[in-house]
Length: 354
Image (cartoon, rainbow, N blue to C red; front, side):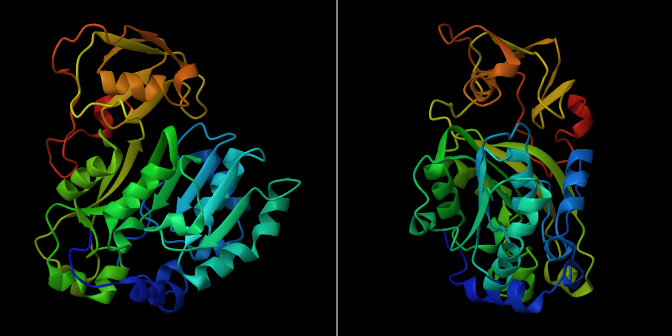
């Protein structure tokens, strides 16, 4: 949905294809990841070609758990850093597609396919990179319900029609699959004048969605119960950008949107519970579904109907024991809280023990 009336596609291609040559060329820190990477990810990054890492621009960690054998799509894959991390994690039986619209970035990613195939010890590549617009994945012949997972790292803010991207993601995800992505959000709508500034737009700031609009678009696209996993404030360390965007607070937020048509608009109570059995790599003791839901191994936890389905009807089902069904409804579930990430009263990582 184009709110500014301007097509930024050429400006973004120019900015990421010709203006920026490495991460240090960014004028602000909005597209610089401050995520703390797990040791496994750090080891994989050491295997990735230096040129690919040097040209990485991202604002979070868009690598969820339990990826072996999955078919994954990386929206706005750029130089391919996250795509190659995923290539290693899905294994030789999985498959990764990176989509980007910037020829210069795609050239870097494609140049190093053979290098990474050898680094990971694969007999043949499990990755490909396509040039295209993430607002129109149908043009790339990516089939309906063909992907287990879609990721994106600080890219959706750069396109005009965010709703189109979310709708496309819903279309091509398998039932039980998820869109797991990081992006920049604002605590109120960014003025049109700022949206029309090519530098502020290219720096992932003026294209940022107001959080309330994002929740609305996600639900319109079919993702009935959006969940957020991590959030951190963005401090704009550039005087000119600070002045232009004064009064607007920005956050980097990692979201999990799960495709399950049976999810309800609210968290409803059916007297259900789950017990985490352990076994998810990297989450052996605590399994984190989202910011408000951490499950300790062996402990029975009450859950709403939506959380129950997000575990039972997805790749995480083998790692949980499930209690109850949907035969009796007890009203609104009191334990869920979709706290606004920008609020001081919102949940923090400490609240769920992760």
